[in-house]
Length: 526
View (cartoon, helix red, strand yellow):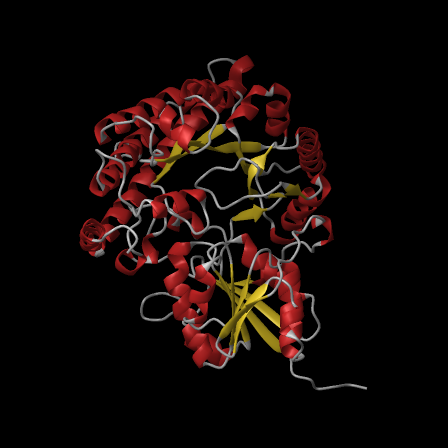
């Protein structure tokens, strides 16, 4: 017997960055993995239509409003969503997330938020800004049970891993156990992302991290899918989406050595079988450079770039972060990656606060010199420099908050929590203005206009790589690195100029002055 039961539409939204920043360029080529995974889980349920809107990658035929962002009013007119999921993975996007939540709430939709931002008091804050439900922790299993319970008017208290308001009181259900069997999950369906142009596909292998860095929100025992499941994800995207570029988003590539070797060999065999070379980027610990067999396997798997969290070239800052490595050792290991043929992307944090009791007094100029010297000696191909961010739930945030050093969110605003702005009173003799200026000095020195001329020069010297038929491969590799780095660094200069222009148009400097004054005049504990 045929029924005419109405289907329910679930729209998952990744909110736009508040302003142009260093992530904007790559965001137009990729998408956040979490919303895709959640949408994929719901798409398997009977009676549901599902889509993902990534406001940072919204390029093909999507209706736009006067600001150039997705026109959600038009989307609701042509394809009304009954329930809306909002991804709160970055604190800087929360003001936009709340704006969207209030809009959809007015449209009669049920609003659900999740992501790293929503812990502690931030959960209660969500309910004051148009959110009906908060998913706490991993969302794959929770979202299926929650949506089914809402639609069938079941007992919400029976759904583990959520929070909601009832009769003016917040209800938070017991924590849902962490997922350990990832192979049972469906492959992420990127076709659910509407209006996007995806060129770099994110792949997840390992969740959790046992490194216990003070500033990081990723904690817990590492849990991983099988290497076969990872290859299945990649193969599916190659065959259905003609994908060629992948970013394995975990911080711990190489964590389980034997499984990593098996993954690399599987990837190499797959590419050989289909006659196509892929381009993979991974995030990896610096000490994995000591393993020559692993490096060789990674190169054979077409892993071409490694992203490494050096964090700082200053020993005292590394110790404060719980990083058990010396700067001179990091230089040597970075060069090993370089010699093995990898492009090396270095990630740093400038101006990390030192714990009370440690004797440390370094000026902004001295710190800048340390960073510039390290970057040059390590021969890094590209860099990313951020300022410390007091993210919700981290040990760093608790330490700075206990010292009453964090600038008020009410004054600064969450939209500046993206690592590009000073958000707390730094260690003396640094000032917040010093931190901001240092970021521009280091990045501005690395990404420069002059590399435009190097692009043309490298094209002219291209024939010189064929200096020996026996060294053709080595010559090509060297030439390509020079040309590619010149291109990327000139492009980085363009991005940096756009960021500075956006900064001048913002009111951050005025907010920073006001926040600093409030901090100086307030008493501890207030």
